[in-house]
Length: 480
Image (cartoon, rainbow, N blue to C red):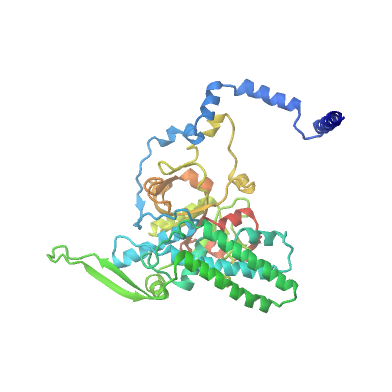
């Protein structure tokens, strides 16, 4: 009897499954046997080459698709090349935007003091960046206190906060507020070069705090009371950051060896110079009058060109304004990047570094991987469509330190300084060919004084607002 019941149950499930499958076959838009047969016949007629199947299934696709012709006649000559500091390494952290900024700022000290190398402390800057981000997050929780948890802005804040990401304006705001120190004064730690674990712990604390602040609001507490509680909550984040980075110095002694001007001197004694500073006085002496007024130029063909935009809630420091950008054609971005290099100014830029990047030799070039030939398929799409459908986005910041131009001054290739150490690329440098710039560069930071009168006037426009959840701009403010 029991066996009969089991058999009937199996038959019932089988009949129901058959009915369900039968219904799904007749539904418009569903995959069906006829379509699958067509796909198979098409493959057999056009792609059924056992040698290609074996090659692809048993090899790395990038190596298999590497276009060797793109490696021929590639020199390493750049007719414009700036002096810079040694290659830096962000390691297992998302601080590319900060390292790119440090790579622009550090040579200013080298030039002033006539020393061979210098690096600002990224851990010092990161400490204050994280604390500011924690404060901004909790302020946003207070600001959005009456929104439901599935509100797009609120859910975005709960996902994208307290991370390593940022961009140039984050850095400029931090150094103006907190100053800077040499790396020797506040060096890297185990946590600063591998940030995942302590960042996760910080988010755990802050999400707990967010829940408490929202409950306080439900209980009728005022914004003043919520903010007072927030200020006490941040003490835990401060403590966590001290454990991760050490305590930021209030005063330090900067000591360096000065190069000798008199090479004929028989005195081999090195000239050591030392001086006491605060982070703010160090910034004032070396940078306050050295940093130009920078502006952010973007290339996003999904938006109107020659238009200012402002990204909602796109700052790390609560009291500073949201980020503003001028959207221009890619040719304009190249024009101002070239002007900057000719003016001996390195250029901070943002791009999609995951696209057509031959790490082994440090080459960014369109077609370096010929997937079209490997698979017999068309992988090409316009930059506009790839941005709109989230195929490409700004995800990494680096620095232009040189360019190679034709006899008529047209850029042919760009020298890129990265922050991934010396074992990747060409000892830490990449060669970016001009066609790659067109497709994958999204932003450059340049001196405002280099803009034409027409483009400078566009900076005075009232910017169009961009929602804080818009994917392209969300990526831009979270460069890592």
